[in-house]
Image: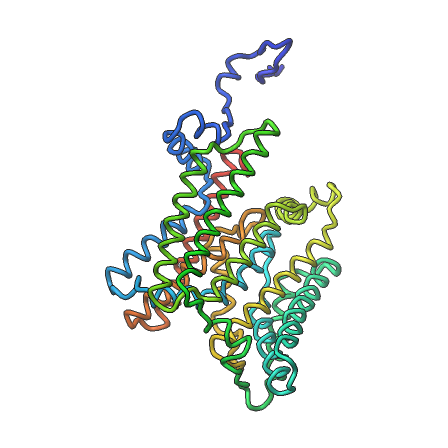
Length: 429
């Protein structure tokens, strides 16, 4: 005969008080901060660590360590020129990582993004230089082509049922061959450095007001968003962040935003590439966190069967997500073409694919699906490019750079796996 040990309330009374006393109580972190003040932040931090909810803590700590180590090795690492170069270089990989994050949220992978980016650059070069098409129109064709290619991969995966790994691996080979065919025997088509594509990574807003103005917009935008969200939650009678919490977060953001603006103005000004990247991050983050479509992506990454039973069109969401990945792969290809002012046979090859995936994962997006934000692309690509630039300043060979980047990626995957197990133990996954 078994005894029910659960604490079942009857007429407002708890039948088994011993079981109720030992039960874990889930406390909303915003209530802790409101009730305990600054001590609430420490309590919330300990709660998250014990539950395996590390968030962006590892990558932020990693970035701080990278800056301290490389700055101690070479004083040029945190110079205005080097920071500006890092900010411009990371955009191409970062754009592609944004698309990969959408796919990873489903718990899938896209191995074709490198080749698709190469096709994008080749299309723009062939259409605008060889065929004389208007460059803006050529850019539109390239981006739309990336979206169609991604949707095609998604169709074979979602509708036909072929594994995403196999479909996109086939796409990697096919679109690589297609790119080589487009470029022809010469293998290289030079772009106009002063054209639209050429200006993507070479144009800077030299007026100091541009960088500081963007910092002001970022800080005020964050504060307004957090403040309005708090007001909506309070009106609905659900826990909301206290104003002290919002003020602290806004102040921290302001410090970093204005420090970055100051550094950019010490060199050539605010890079156009970075502005476009930030716009993309804000837009995609809004889509994932504030729209029904974004919630469906997270739901699908959590459980396909549960999503299907909830009435979500699984096939349509999957196809659209792979189309988004193809779109951002094409956009990233334009930035790579801009950086070298040409489309050549090496476009989209080498370590590009691995860096794109690594940027998403290192930034905090889970390989198991259902957890991540597009801002992870920014954090992850900053880590990768900072390591590359830091090692290059010291004249360390490329093989060592690969080894170190691989080690960082492995450490991130291990942390992700351990975190997932800890969350399961804590009943949060």
